[in-house]
Length: 209
Image 1 (cartoon, rainbow, N blue to C red):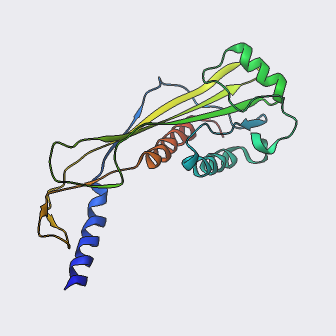
Image 2 (image 1 turned 45 degrees about the vertical axis):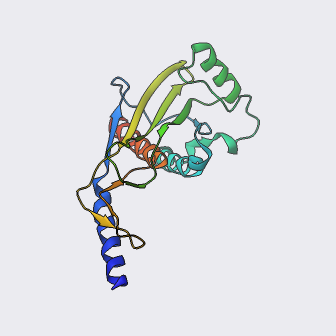
């Protein structure tokens, strides 16, 4: 009997996880894409929380290598560069000229992510409707033409997962007390990954390949 209850509980949780209330918003103005067909490209080390860094770096390298092949280089794999790892967002022409002089590359990719709010775990159990919260994360991708000292692509996406109430009523194994709220969320780390994918989809659609 216990096994039947446990199976039913797990099955229902898996079915309800798709009910998470999450949205992704593009907060930058409309921009054209880029021309991937020429030039040497340098991708900067991602500015993001340590826990997500390896995964998001891998996804970023995969996307740009698909479009650039051997013309893409990762900053940590290139020796002799005269440039700091922390490049400010929306840099001035002077900073972009310094990047050109210090790297010798034609294009530079700068990616920054942030956890704006992280109130909730992936699954939350609530016994009242007064407890609320949300997870929020943002990703900004900028691409610079170092020859013309121009920002040629800039897109920011914010992902939000809000507290939502499911209608089912559950009883715990250790108690007969009913818990009438079970909530499912995208964690802030997963929201960052989702936001990055949204940007790559936008960039892929707008660019010349």
